Image (cartoon, rainbow, N blue to C red):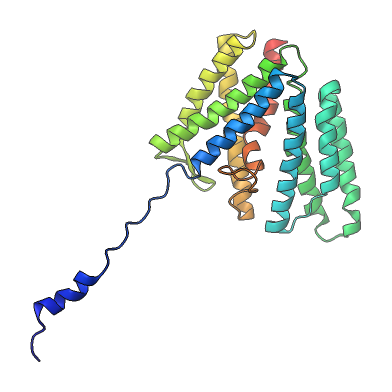
Length: 293
């Protein structure tokens, strides 16, 4: 056989189009401009409510809890076939939020108990199949969303309620932002790889630094608190915000979903923003009540 010419050997290689370089995934892990834009809009709405008629903030909480409950119910039904007692949860959730305003935690707890009873009755016509599963999920939802949210509503009524709400929100935002930035820039050691692979110890350290600074500043400048109280408050908020984030990540892994919803561009669903706020609201109310009363 005659030897193949060098030109013919190289021709196919020469004519092949160069492969396009693979696109690197953003280290941010989400649509950052959209996430920032949505965050700014939500922050502006909250500030307007607090700086005009602060009780409007309770309305924002009530609306967020209603949307979050609906999102959670839809996610459970789609992914696991769990049927929440949605109507009692929505009605009872509003009762917990609004009764916490004049009656404090007693009003919220009474509304919670009545909501649980309503869920038990509402699910009866569905029969015995998966009754315990559905009721357990409904009771969990009633506690996790509206009951926890009621503690955020109870921050508003005191004379320094605006400062209390701002300390709570700034603490959570500082924790999330500090952890996010430190995790993106320096994150190398996974904190809980089987639950949330992107969460790192470096990110948690960033959350602690930002949370302590935010707690110290808000309790001394916005409230009649001491620096040490601000440090304790900041650490507690970081711990509860991180716990809330990990808990929802675990729930989403159990359900096999990425986000609870799609309402907020760059964030997912509203539930995906409430995860760190809900447990932090409980701790904020307890600590601020102890420090400032």
